[in-house]
Image (cartoon, rainbow, N blue to C red; front, top):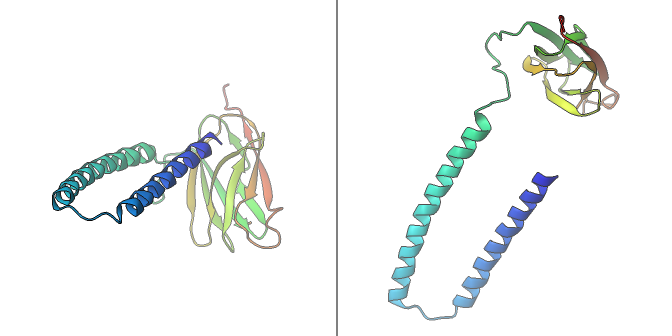
Length: 181
Ligand code: CUA
């Protein structure tokens, strides 16, 4: 909600700046050109452009690093060193999840595929909040690695419209406390 407000404010300020630019041009449009002033303002524009480019480049590098440093998607083409492996098959309109009892506190690798059309494999915590998700696609196995912090009954819901039975396409699995706790 707060992020939305920040984005809305930035958008409105941006629209305001563009509008101010247009109004400035409309006001200046009727005035005769002065050679000195023109070359001076061209120089200023050139300098501004240079610094704007440098600033945007730094923002781009910083933003890319900040958002990609902890890439949340597991490597798809290598063998992952994860002890708990769960096979998931989505089909119209059910989920096959094996095994259906997992342990909290250590990573789980979900290998998710589909027997027919695209489905959305989304895991909801016992309190109804979405925890993580990936696509279930025919012909592909998407790997999703996730560590459950809390034991409980988790619900899987389909997030991709897949036909008449899409809405009730649900399943549950159990997460139990790790052994030795
Ligand atoms: Cu499966 Cu919607």
